[in-house]
Length: 111
Image 1 (cartoon, helix red, strand yellow):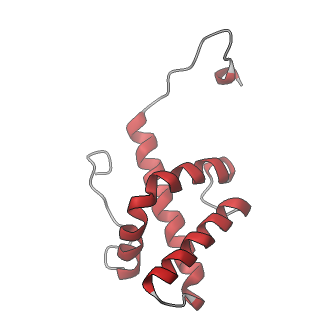
Image 2 (spheres, rainbow, N blue to C red):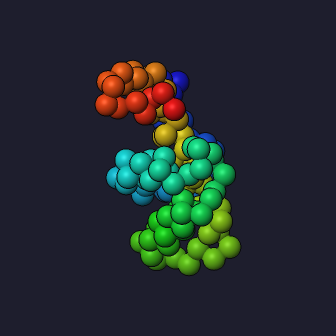
């Protein structure tokens, strides 16, 4: 279903997740890029800089919704990470296998 472009929510009846998806959608390209760069090896476990980035985004979401996330902050951060990870996986599946660069000047693929 993901390959066909159908967006399947993680939890179909979770209103918070649907709201987060809506709010994150315009920022998804940047969030995926940052997760790729900041998450350790693409791991979904939250680490240092990626955790700080998600925390800052969650804070902006809270201000936009004019609510204090309080106890829900951890849940919001976890849901955001799951949403971004799913989009990252979908993009990786859609891209297929990258073609290695074989130029003698760019041997990064050989590492």
